[in-house]
Length: 255
Image 1: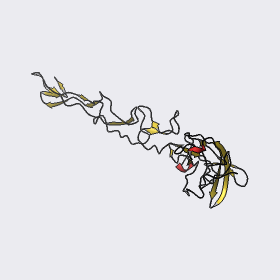
Image 2: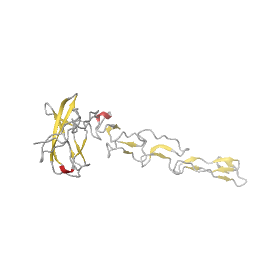
Image 3: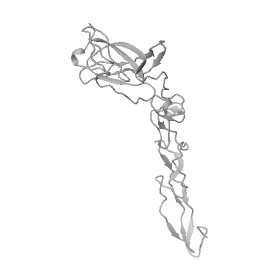
Image 4: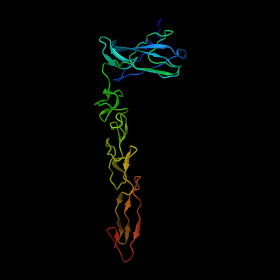
């Protein structure tokens, strides 16, 4: 006879709110269930009414994380509704040797098991890398740079829409203008940020050797030599040179 071993509807039910898209349920089971086949049954509820159901069989393996994906079907017409198992308190029922079912996965005591579930919606959320307009459309809940992203990706010099890493928040190529507009061009005289990005995904400083101060005259017979940036956001210290007599300083040159 089948026996229910986990039933979120009566023990540990999570009532939401749920984000759009797939949901995950983690179930811990005892060591002695190693090798027991179980049936994971999930129901998605809306306003207390069942709007989707699904089942999936799995055999528990001690000390292993088992991922069980349940594709929900409409409770009335069998239309698939992709979601996660155990959402909104879906019960676990089924049978197996020993008749011991559970809601998702199995493992030793302390070993987590995750099950797919229905978010109770009927709409499939967009995976990372897919086009979006708002975060609510995405499985992750984040929409950045026109695609569903792993995070909000709001840092400077990062993008979630790079051709080789769509959906992942990664540094933009060296020398690219900051897509977030957070890297200000402070001008070469400052030797600080130039409005572009460096290779590590940070605001780049003006490169070493960039002219930050032209040669000038500090007095009629003394020249202040031209200075350049050190590559770390600073302009080199002044170096003054006396003109050999009878030369005088004119426009930063002894003549």
